[in-house]
Structures are given as structure tokens and as C-alpha cells.
Length: 156
Image (cartoon, rainbow, N blue to C red):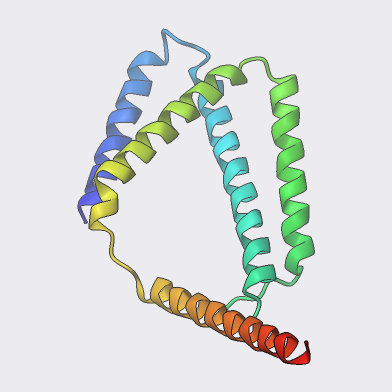
């Protein structure tokens, strides 16, 4: 609840700041749009990579949602997001400020997470299920490897 309240307060303060600074800095509108676009592109790329990793390494975990395009869809999303990001870097000259802003925001978020929020995390039921499933899969893989190694040793 505290995080939600702080987020709303931060958003209101940022909105007020933008409204006062906007008339004096006309590029702020395009910079904010660039920040939003770059953040969305990074998000799409990270989600695509994580989906591909989950589908290849842990394909036996049951999921409620199944993507109709599977790994090909995630790969397509990653490539398109990467191409749009590269085009934005090449074609838009004002994107430098957006990248610097995103870097500062990400640094602040990582600093906040590792210094304060990480100690207060709680595992949700979905995360607990996923961690247990991954643990079981790794244990099964280790058992199979040990069995194969024993069979190889017996043959020698």
C-alpha cells in the first residue's frame, strides 16, 4: 500500500513539475515520448528473452496462458523491438536526453531496490510455485545425469 501511495505522489509531483517547466523547455514533450517508447522497447525485449529462456529450459512447467506463436512470436517481437530501437537511435537526434534520463531512472530504481526494497520482499504464491517447479526440474536433470554417468562407468 505504501508503494502505491508513493507512486501516486511521485506521479503527481512529476506532472506538476512538467507543467511548470514545459513552457520554458519546449523539447520536454518529445523527450517524454522518447522515454516512454524506449522503456516499452526495453520491456518487450526483456520479456521476449525471458519467455524464450523459460520455454527452452523449463518447457515442462504448466502455465495458464499459452502463446499462440510460441518461441517464433517472442523472437519476432525481440527483432522488431530491436530494429525500432536502432532506428530511433539513428534517426532521432533528441533521443540522447531520453537515454540519459532512462539511465538515471534505472540507476535510481536499482539503488532503491538493492538498498531498501530487497530486504522487504515477499514471495507470491505464483513465484513460490515457479521456484518449486524449477527446483524439481533441476533435481530430475541431476538424477538423470547421475544415472547416465553410472551406466557409462559400468560399461567401462
